[in-house]
Length: 130
Image 1 (cartoon, rainbow, N blue to C red):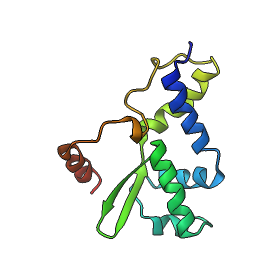
Image 2 (cartoon, rainbow, N blue to C red):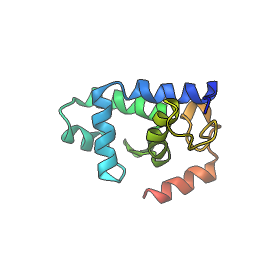
Image 3 (spheres, one colour):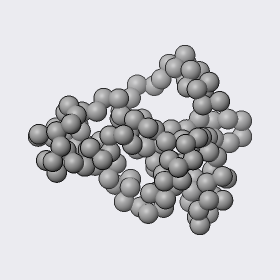
């Protein structure tokens, strides 16, 4: 299957993001926890300082692997399951091994590619992770 430009851009951002071992480590800890976590909780689990963890979480969030929500004075972070489900298949598709998905994974795009979620959608998401 031939890859289109839009898919290539999304998938390239995923590979760039995961090119850093600290981000791979943080994504792994969030995936294993299977719940929203604070920066402080993640700092306790890895050998990385708080400012660096915050930076890497921003990159993971900007790419779409991680979702976040502000709660009071802190933020909660959790894995975007839609992206993680598609990542192994994206690698196989790029290499021409597996034509599993259509040209673009429309339900798994980086936040900068989506329209701003509505207030109702944000409220629904908050209650789902409360």
